[in-house]
Image (cartoon, rainbow, N blue to C red; front, side, top):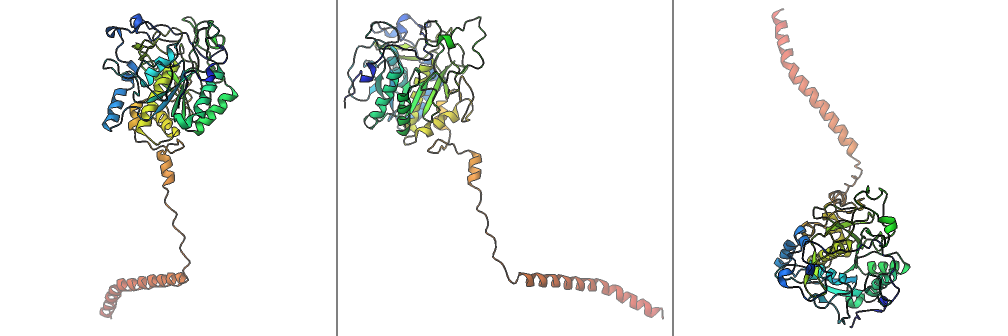
Length: 441
């Protein structure tokens, strides 16, 4: 089977609004050549970044060790589709299908692939699930307006990309689909999401980043925050503007970015009532178009080196790939239930946190806590177990026709025994009285 690098769904409309898209800036913590948006020749080894900080924050090395002790390669058996700008063939990720390689114009899809499943670089881990296979689903050429042949991100191409996965599920066997940047809702997207749900495919969606400049999409509704502002309005909720994040669907996981300490920032995260999880993104390392490991640039308004929700979604997709390895055969709902139940916040079905949802993901606990979710994702809590284990009611005894006779006999026996006892007690007294009466005669 041959999957073309630019399926028909890419050749569509020019750039339109994409909910929450932020302008990315290079990370100042490393040399220019270390930023993933740097596309010059391969960066010398001594100038490349160190370990990816979120791997340490989320104890991914311990997860890898745990799986390897079981004889399982991290991410083995998982297939993750990346709906972004395309994946470079020079970074060593495992790609499903025979794919041709066009000239890539944007670094994001390659960096995303490196975060999910990039191989180790210079003895340092880069990807969350390096043994996972990726499906390249390029849905735009570049996000910057330019020549007429440069295709931007539109709702139609995202919906078409999801439809492509649904149409080819029998061949690709996709387990997880990553949609890093949200767009507007369409009927075609509704239909694709429903089909992927039926096929047990988990859709991991970035919740959207706050626009920082007037030219950014949705700036009028969600931008304009600066040091002098009081923050976003208390009733802000981007759920209706960010899709597929906005779906109230069991197989759609909406992800936001968070700081290393687990704090969410209004500077980068759009408040969204459909956010399910958050992941720390500061110091995230992926791969660049030049084939070198690189640090993912920051996003948002004034948050420096913190990448946005799209890369947080890539991290969650990598964690889900690890869980596909560990819990082979479980349904999408079961895997998602494990993530929600072990996150740092509440395991409630409606977490009511518009910045982090259920909380920060905890991959090691998701793979080690002895949970037993049902195929529909419902967790069997202690209360549920108590209800399930109520003893069977004892059947009513059959009528006993001799019960009345036995009851009467028992009462007569008690009365007779009581009279005999009284007689025995009174006999000595009566005998002494009789002797006394004879002496007095």
